[in-house]
Every structure is written in C-alpha cells, then in structure tokens.
Image (cartoon, rainbow, N blue to C red; front, side):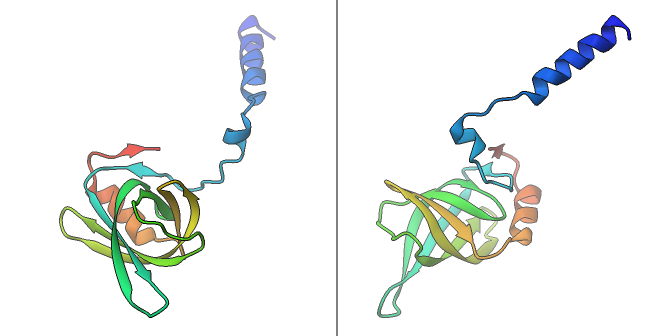
Length: 132
C-alpha cells in the first residue's frame, strides 16, 4: 500500500467518526427548507363557532412538508389550520396543516401531506432563496 493510500484511509476514518451535538443528532427534517422574502403567508383559523380568521404571518422558512413562521397572535399547539401561501406572481396555495411546534411567537407548521406541487413551484419560481 502506498503512502497516498494510507492518507486516504486516514481521512476516511476522520469522516466516519463525525460527532454531532445533541441538537444536531435529533434533527428530523427530511426536506430541504428554503428562506425567501417574497412570499406572503396567512394562517386560516377556524374557531369554535366555525368563523374563519385570517392571521398574517412572517415566513421564516418553507419546504414541501411545512414551514416556520412568526405570528404575533397566539395559536394553540396541535391546532388544525389552513396555510395560505401567495407568491409575487399571484400564484396561491391553500394547504391544510397543523401547528406542531410553538416557542414564543415562532410556530412550526406541518402540512397534512407532502406538497410536491409547492416544492416544484418553489424551485421553478424563486431566484433569491437560501437553502437551510
């Protein structure tokens, strides 16, 4: 075995001995999240009397599985909602979802099912997003 082969073997050992912090190792995300500033978000809330409220929210990141938003109004954990997503070209998606994470005014929202149409549209229409 040449010395170059030994160097490659040694490099591989370092790669596979990667240690993750507790926060990194519990990341369960399976979809790429995008950060963009030109998408408008509203959350449709149905209350006890079947009255639907539309709450404006600030988009933090988005994927085909869900999104993270900041909203000044209080929304309960596990609350079923509709997410209204409007792009700058007026393309609109209305997606049933549920609140799965809540910390202060930041909410993690999971779509009821994968939305491949949204994921494809994100890739084709955006030119200023950042991958997260």
